[in-house]
Length: 412
Image (cartoon, rainbow, N blue to C red):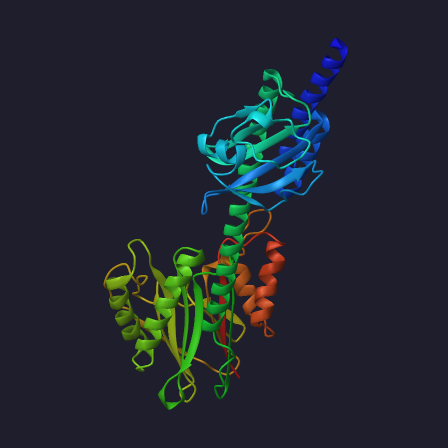
């Protein structure tokens, strides 16, 4: 008999070990609980083993997993009011282990399995709060001596940990799914803020593209028609990345369009936009921007620059970066913005670009740089897709650390 008891104790300890291992290997709480109650029923010879989880909204215990029925008094999903029904309801109220060595004499017992003669119910707690009840029933009287109840209480602790881990994982997964959905919707909305097609300008081609490094970004380009056939062209970069930069980009776009559509010269447009952003822009946030007006009749582009990388001008096989005298980023402090006039002779081209192009990094941590940019754009066959493909090839799959945006204006 002693050998049988030792063998049974070893089996029970192995049960505890198996449960602990399962907890560390799965976050599928339904499958885990079904395995546990089945294992408990087999190991202890229980007529019934179950886990009930607390529904805080209704103050009820709900059967989440159950094994060992011979009669279907209660099934998975059945509910019991805490403090009102059976021993499980009593344990839910007192939040302490309760043992009935003879259920026929227990005042709280309600029949759930006809063969049951003894029953123990153990609270499941996480961070000191009740999250459920572990239930075990046996067809023998006094089948749960103190050492067995102690082992079941240790088992209940593991079960509570598993439930809490699974719920935490589920909350995190749902939060990530929600954030991913929000970002996807934000990206779709942001894409509508970019021009849907290239503008038609006699004697010129204008094309822009943006590749955000995240779902949404702070880079932006745009073009919109002005009076007398002129075209406004803008490329901007809001400091920061992600959703915050995208929101600031959207508001900057609105302000720029509102001011730019008046047809004012580029320097005056940037000055007014700066004044408006100074009133509302968050502290330590700013926007770099290059804003130009293409006049197809005069075949000129007049642009002003607010702290943005200097546009690259290509003419007669040579390329140079065009500077302006004055122009701080927008949203820092008041200042003037000087203008520069560029004569667009046939075959010449002017590139607006963000610093994500020149700062794109190779796997060996080299930057794409101005020299490679100049060499790419100076080619007679240079195109916007070709430039972006050159940057992609240079980075060789290295994740981009900044948005990459370009606008190329070519004179035919």
